[in-house]
Amino acid sequence: MIRSLRTGAAILALTAGTALAQQTDITIGMVLEPPNLDPTGGAAAAIDEVVYANVFEGLTRFASDGSIVSGLAESWEISEDGTTYTFTLREGVTFHDGSAMTAYDVVFSLDRARAEGSTNAQPSLFANIVLVEAVDDTTVEVTLDGPDGAFLFDMAWGDAVIVSPDSAETNATNPIGTGPFRFVEWAQGDRVELTRYDAYWGDAPALEDATFRFVSDPNAAFAAMMAGDVDAFPNFPAPETLSSFEADPRFSVIVGSTEGETILAMNNAQPPLDDIRVRQAISHAINRQDIIDGAMFGYGTPIGTHFAPHNPDYVDLTANSAYDPDAARALLEEAGATDLTLRLMLPPPSYARRGGEIIAAQLREVGIETEITNLEWAQWLEQVFRGYDFDLTIVSHTEPADINIYANPEYYFQYDNDAFQALMEELATTSDPAARTALNQQAQQMIAADFVNGYLFQLAKTGVANADIEGLWENSPTQANDLTGVRWVE
Image (cartoon, rainbow, N blue to C red):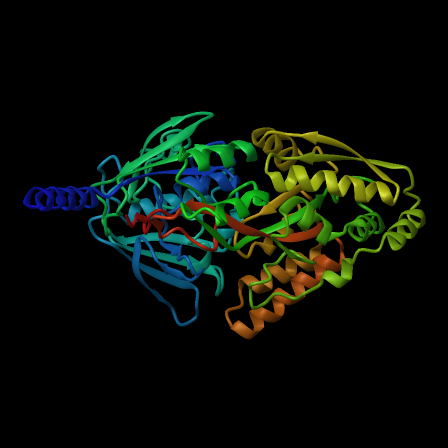
């Protein structure tokens, strides 16, 4: 009896000791590998999914609920006329190479982003900046050409992170930021490894090491989760298997929303898609719900314009491009665009590959044939995004509140509308919330009426994680896998 009690005590002590050894590393699954690791030098969402809030930080940042909170700027003051922002920076911030982060790095970063010839993918974020000055080491003054109610929001984007002049040119392959994790290794085609930065200015994350592993195949992603090779897959590519994870107590399924407007993008500058009647016909040929059911297994919200349904300014314009194959055929005949064959370029995500097959069948029903080409992500960026060499493509735009991309006639779908550009200029200088709502809604209606693209659905965030992990974002207010609050609970 005594021996039995001692054995039980030993087991309890051993169990307690094991509990103290809490796991501090994590492996995150991602569908796409980033083309580089510099968020100021590329448009791919996968860049921010690795480095946003983990490696790089901006003056402000997005919180998990979409609100804008302080980042490297501890506080700020806005002049009475709304044109001058004075930022007070946090003290004791260092880059991962040990050098101090000061106001001069902020000046460098913002001036670099807005310079002529900048490789920044979002130049509109900086277009209204007139001057950036370092008042002292911890104070920066930014002067705008007019009041801008979205400026603090813009500074939270990954494209606006603060970088050092010493490492800016090599951040693509060796990122050096100010975040709680520093870069260790990029094994291209496989993974990126980060480790906790011990000199971080803020609260230390619970995790010590993080690996982002790239698993593009849905079947391989399922197998990796089941085998425990991946601890969490925040954007899981096989929604048809989620029921298996829901039935397994080892896992938790996390379903939320994203900022990802998933669209059938059209090359507006290239015949026959420069004819609004052809674009309208394509829009009416699309059955959104069939795409959501067939490609996303029911996960997704139909959209009729480029705006997130969870945004309070959203206008439901799905009826404007309702599924109507008879109307589509009539419009094509009116435009003299019968017997069309269009090139449909598809990037790797399953929503694009699966959705493309469904859309091709729907277009065939109204007399439009498609030539499908499956592209790797780097090819898509080169040929479609930068080269304009496409007719149709499917992509999810995960940047927050990014309807302003339609004001750039050089953006890949090449929509050029002076009235829309003037509307965005007015929005940029408007701070009154009610007035901004009215302008946002007018913008949504304008691009829907012009049938710029085929608007499909808002991408759902369907994630799978080990049930002992907490702190992963449920929703995606920006394209990020923020690990700062992630921890193992057992």
